[in-house]
Image (cartoon, rainbow, N blue to C red; front, side, top):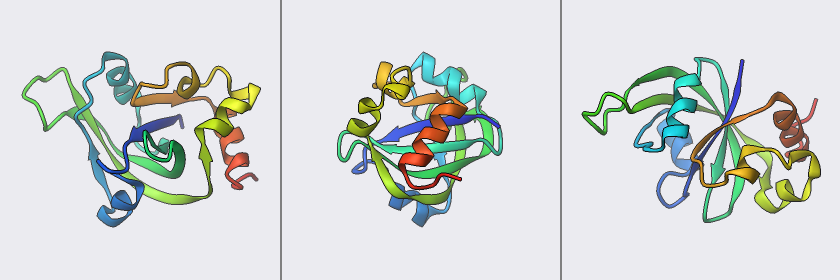
Amino acid sequence: MAYWLVKSEPGVYSWDQLVKDKKTVWSGIRNYAARLHLNGMKKGDEVLFYHSNEGTEIVGIAQVIKEHYQDPTTDDERWVAVDLKPLRRLKKPVGLAQIKADKRLANMALVRIGRLSTQPVTEKEWELIMDMAGEGK
């Protein structure tokens, strides 16, 4: 299993909306690097859900339930989407300032290339985020 992070402004599509919807099509991504990450997502992979611009924090964990397919928001077959479902809200949200303050996360994509809407998360980064969220083993 691999780990990922997706970003959405809460006013556009929030964690609470994902929970209400029970699943969503993660579509409309028009960045080449993010597209590569969408292509890499496999069914069962876990995904950190990050609220961008407002709140700037990781608030929940979602799961990939359908691997990449033609993005329904465009006729251009090069762009893909995946389906996500919510797993659980984090016990404690993990803010961007908290992440940036931890030197062990200095190489995390969220810190290095913050504008990227879909990005990989290493197993070590995942474990650190889970500890920060009170979700550690």
